Image 1 (cartoon, one colour):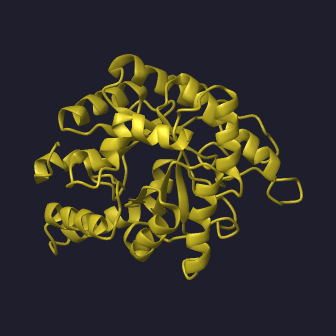
Image 2: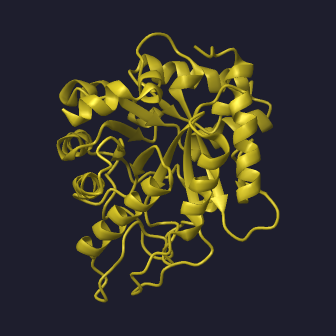
Image 3: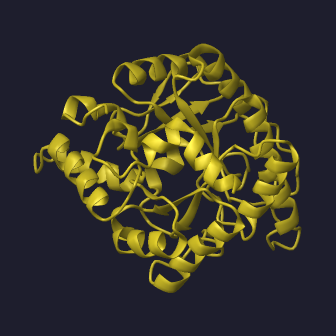
Length: 323
């Protein structure tokens, strides 16, 4: 019942997941707010996307709002990382960014906050470890849940866990509910593959693994059943919206997941997919704007009810409607 209330009563979510037409409201714009930087930094391959200070983040949002964007997902990148055996996560920077966004823009936008540990750990993994090198599941889920609560208390409209740890949606939902945030939605990275297409993002979020890889907890790209089952588990644990990542390589999964869960399913057009269009443009091989728009239409055709894309801020100029 609470899930239905969250989906029905939130006008931003209704716009985001509407099956009527295709508008800017179906697109979510990522933002990278980075602590301690003096100058905004270009991100190689991600045309139009930068690593921003808090002040620049506010200016960027104002510009994006003027271009019709109303949905954002924030990636906070703190300056001080947790050590390999240090289980203290200082949320001050990300909560400060959230608070300042909320204070300046009120309810003019819907702010999702990515909830993961990869950008706050010195090793770049989406979890913390025991001293023997095994994932410390209990502590990881605790840190993720407390992060979700602190972000919501600071003013986040929705929580988006991207870590792929078993049980994290259930843990976050229980923590939010216990804190009386029953109406805060969870948009889960529910089917996330161990893909080669995340490189530019990892540079942007300072989150590249310092050892090994993420195949221990992300999904093997060959495994269709695990990909679908992962989203079903997130739905059963209390997620309100589901997501496949990367977008185009997961096109065959969107409709089956929607049918099995009866939940809105979106797609994350990841940094490598977007950077591929940028590289083709630089080589004079495609029209970037037309190529970007084509990918969005293909994802919508495949059943995606919303799309996270670094190009959301260009939608209005590409002729994508506002309503």
